[in-house]
Length: 175
Image 1 (spheres, rainbow, N blue to C red):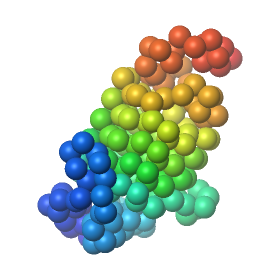
Image 2 (tube, rainbow, N blue to C red; image 1 turned 90 degrees about the horizontal axis):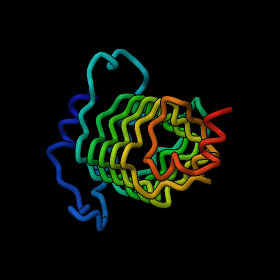
Image 3 (cartoon, one colour; image 1 turned 90 degrees about the vertical axis):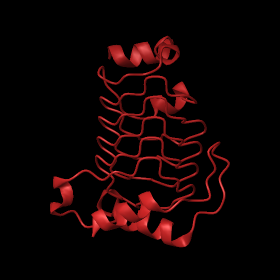
Image 4 (cartoon, one colour; image 1 turned 135 degrees about the vertical axis):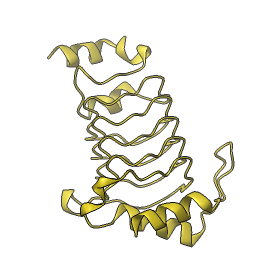
């Protein structure tokens, strides 16, 4: 069923324009994305879910705690537009988000460990309690040191050079 929903999403254009000037996402597209994010944890871990270039601005797949979290582990969302999406507490461990637009997204409590966010737009994203351990944020834009300090990261997390120059980041990484 997950493969079918992913194929549906890849074949249905959405109202989000190339320049990320977002419009209304069709209900069936949003429902398919939410169904994938809320699927039961089962044997479908054996295949990769390809949702490259998906545009679901304003998606709401948040959880209230770790038990109700959306599961987007290892999902390929490279180039996706998730502008303003509420992904609170989602498990996005190992997700591909290279070049994704996460502007204004609510990522509080999200597990982005080992995720690839190279060149992602994180302007005004909420990053409180986010797990960025070993994540790759090379060339990511819109990052603010204050937000990053409210989350978890380690020596293997890759940040843009301007972030690494901040004394507070240097201090945190040396602890």
